[in-house]
Length: 324
Image (cartoon, rainbow, N blue to C red; front, side, top):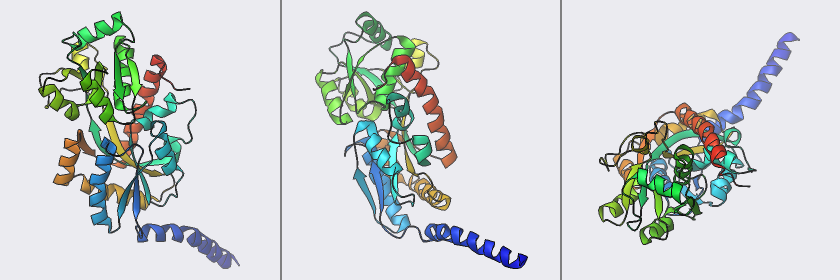
């Protein structure tokens, strides 16, 4: 009787375990989608396409890039959070995952509970710039001008929660320089308006700004990273120029899947993406688009999201930048 009970229990355990193992072992058996939570042509799109090409080769299935922009990336992220946890729907997104829970009064999903990190793809540095018509020569002079005329100077970003937006809010909190935020659908139009003088100030992705800085169409005042950039070695960091040691804001992008995705599939995606990020063509594509490849483990990416969520929640609270 006891032997019969044990056999029945073992059979029941196998019945619940084997389907998951079978799914993981046969993965992938059909096309995979990478969801970009923004408009086509942006940084996330470029990164996604570069990775998709390599994943398609290594996984042996088509990897399709689709776009679901809107609500500060919440629409695309929510779509993936509610997708089947089977590895066929992947999200590429960045800082909004850490900032949006504090920015928005209500969220349709929980980034920490409904999504599982896979791997960090790349990080991005922004440079604080001004249009040549603005009579400042340093970040210190810009801060002084912004304090003198609070809210008069404006800047653009691809939306609330982006690294551009958060870099400006962090400057407001740390240095008291308040700028007016103008949200765009993407970086391209914001950069165009900045070059044209409609936007006086910019927190622009460094490689994008570089060509305009060299052409004299924009003035570079400081970079938002902890260290100076090799692309603009003579331009100080915000921290060193203003004497604010804890000012640092770099953007990042990574891959995530719905929570409860089998661990074997998460590991497979992490390993294959890590391999893709070592490919010279992928590295160059990411570099030209303004990023530096990060890679690393799932645990490292998870830790970065958690730390940025904690500190950005405080920045947003202090700046009053929440969206009701």
